[in-house]
Length: 331
Image (cartoon, rainbow, N blue to C red; front, top):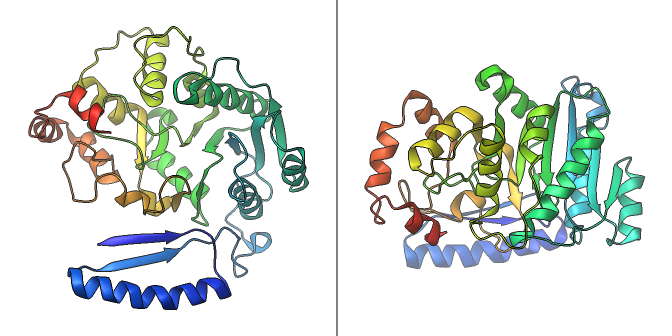
């Protein structure tokens, strides 16, 4: 089964496109013995959902939203517009760069969103990790000046298309967070068998938890043991907690079990309009579990709560024969 996302929206063009797609998809399915579905993700808020008349959105006193990163054409403004329309009283800050378009920054400010224009770090670091650290820190520091308990950290190139994503986060925290200190991340880009690899694109948790997580040093240009951004962030967190990183699958799974909650993309309506239009849940490991590129779905995280023995057996049975280096090389 293949899913195709069209996050551009609906309208006359999409109606025409749908008719053409139906014929093309039917042709493919008949010839390939497949079932193909598609979806259209609206960036604009549905007219049938009026936040002013919604009684379930009393979140403004406890939750802040941090959008961070550069301004992506169309996408970033639409994310800001949608989030502000969905949660008009929630404090939203966009932490970006002083090199971004002043016109675009002005448009975002006109939505009632506070914009921080940061200086870009001189050393961007591998995968621009220093840029993400700097813009995230700046946004969290701003939100820290308000009586906010929880923060959603959201990269500026991805968005949550569910109309109730903050309510969903709060429900997960209430039911599953150990002492209210876990971070919720999406299953997308959170790889089960790659060591220390929870997604850094979307994160939700207590303000002080996120503040500590991102209070890590910038990466020096002379670094020799950098693997990937997610691993750097987790290892830094462990080291600042006074722990010695064991660098093994058992510790990695224990961190997933104890310090995070993994939310399914479907429940969040997670969309990443970057690199590929594939449905996020089908992008890395479309052929089932277990695979070297298996992501941490909610059911897998629940399995970890019961014990990691079965998942360790699945890890050992991988074609890479349980080698973390081989798993990392495949991603």
